Amino acid sequence: MFVSLKCVYTYIEFATIEISTLLSPVAMPLLPATGAELLESIRINSDALAVDAGGALTIDGHAPAALVERYGSPLFVTVESTLRANYRRIHTAFATRWPAPVNVLYSIKANNALAVRAILSSEGAGGDCFGLGELYATLEGGADPRLVVMNGSNKTEAEIDAALAQGITINVDATDELDFLRAACARHGRRAKVNLRLKVLPPELDHHVNELHKSAHGYVANLRRVKWGFVTEGARPLVEELQRMECVELTGYHCHVGHLSKAPDASAAVAGAVAEAVSELARATGFYPRVLDLGGGWAPQRDPSFREAGRQAFGIEDYAAATTAALRDGLRTDAPLPALWIEPGRYIVGNAVVLLARVGTVKRDAGLCWMHVDASTNNLPRIESGHFHYTVLPATRMNESFAGPVEIVGSTCFRSLIGGARPMPAPQRGDIVAILDAGMYAEVFSNQFNGVPRPGGVLLSGYGVDEIRQRETIDDVFRLQRMPAWLAQIAPRWSAALGEAQ
Image 1 (cartoon, rainbow, N blue to C red):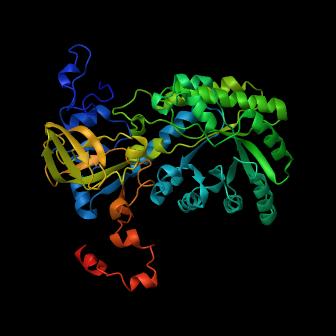
Image 2 (image 1 turned 135 degrees about the horizontal axis):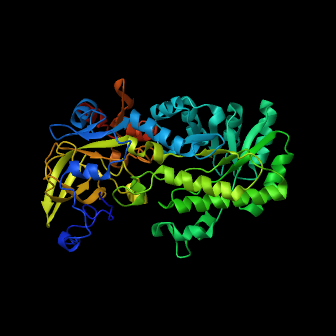
């Protein structure tokens, strides 16, 4: 079985470390020698990836080269069956371990494609949204408003008004929201459903969180400084005020710590701290929740945000078991257990999207090889802002032996390093590469640096191939800019000729 050793086979700088010095004849596994072997070593259950008889990658039975030929490159490719499998697995993991109702609210900030949202709505998924844009996409994608929450620490009056009008639960995260709630209730003549966002600071998190997420004072010290939620002392007067408001139905609590660790014990620590806070507030205020929303951050088994390659050992069932056990132990009450809500994003959509790109210039110098592709960190911005680590497969040459490490780079005037020292067959112009796990925080963070239009996207389903995001043009990049009339008179206009050349 393949073990991720911070991915010895690909992600250690081959130019500076001899591979022979890393291998132990007893302890080390064989390193993947081809793209097919690499894929097999990191595969997770819901991947719709295979290698055909000709040695090419297939995505849900479709050839990347054919998709690029028809729809252009780079291209985001979304797989319906993977979305459904991931949703069903996380829902089952919690629903079979929690005796009260479970609501899985898709966190649309991870990927706001309307087609993705519609597929999850057909599965019964609720929704988590920030602001009017995400609220629009969530409802446009068919989500049931009764299963949707609005989050945010700086909600506007317009956002609260829109959420209340649709019957959406509002996770209160600031005292001035109470005045907005009163006004919105009066306008619409209806009560607002709300949860109160809590902040928990379990000290044991410092033992579990990745060192990259800690400051010199530890992770919990960082957590205290984040803008969301109220500690128990701050929450108590708000609970009392919300209970007095006739226009409000206080249903429960919300708490989100986010992706912080691969250890299920970290999830248990958060859940235990939430249960402790709920119990303390119940003793102080008499309020016991009907809903507990534990937010998102649920780790998939392969995740670029872990900043390392490979497949981790824990499945969602391990996190669900640790979380639900800690909640039940901490609540210890004769009252009925509250409904459990969770807000996964990356778990559901991460491996459901592959970014295809075409190889262009191959440059060799100074003992290195740079393989340019027509995708860039414009399309995967979390490489630069969050050090995400993506697996890249040689889609059109999966059975060919790796010839050595290459620097996989985009064509922008920044370094645009998609992957450093990655094993690849000897690259050739026209090859297609597949960048895995591009479903989360890629398209929603994408930008048009260097005036480069953003890619298109397609959905693979039982109905065939459908375009779900139109490819931008250069005109689209500059469409919302305006030229003052006095400048238009003196500025030469060459864009028409350029447009003819596109």
